[in-house]
Image (cartoon, rainbow, N blue to C red; front, side, top):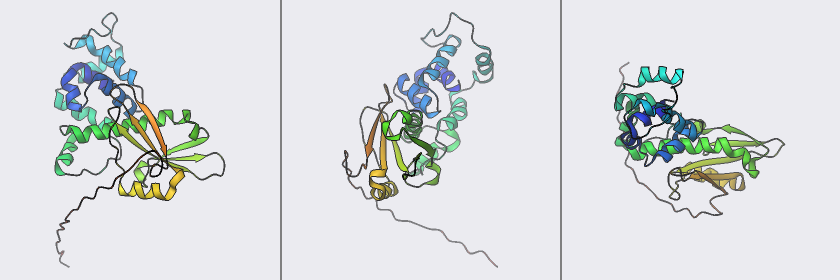
Length: 246
C-alpha cells in the first residue's frame, strides 16, 4: 500500500529516485521483493491516483477504501525524502551484500537511495528471490522438495531444497537482472560451493523485470550452459591499531 501511494504521489520522480525505468519494472520488483504480486502494487497506486495531481485518473469512480484513506491522511503529505526513508527499508533485502565503496555505503544511510545502481541491484536481487520462492513448486526439478531460505548464513547459495526422501539436498543461488539479458556475477564462495556440489547446485536467473519476469535455471552452471570468466581485484588493506592500557 505504501509503495502504491509513493508511486502515485511522486510518479516519474519517484521512479527515478528508486532507480526504476518504468512503472512495470517497479510493479514487478517491488511486488515480488515484498513477497506479494505486481498487480497489488499497481492496484494500490490506482487507488491513490485520484488524490494526487498526476496524469492518471485511477479508480476515480469509487470511494477510496477506509484503510487507504487512513494511510493517506497519515503519510500522504510526506516529502520525497521523508517518504523514501519510510519506504526503502521495507524494499531492501534483510541481509544485504557488503558495499564495494564508500558511495555505496552512503546509499544505505537512513534508507537513502541516491546511489541508484547499487540500490537497484539490492531491490532487484530481493525481487528475484521472492519470485523464485513464489514459483519454485512449479519447477519439475523441485516438485517434491521443501524450501528453506539460507541467505543469512552465507553458505554460498540462497535456498536449500530438501527432498521428501533420503536424497541429499539441492542448493539454489538466485540472481536478478532488470532487463531481458545481462551479466551475472558469482562470488568466490558461490563459485567454490558450485564447484563442490556440481549437479546439486543450481543457478537461477530471474530477468526481464522491466516487462514480465522469466526464470532460467542452470544446473551445475560452471559446466553447463554458461561460460564464466574470472576477474581479479587487488586491494591494499590498511589496518588501525590502538593500545588499551592495563
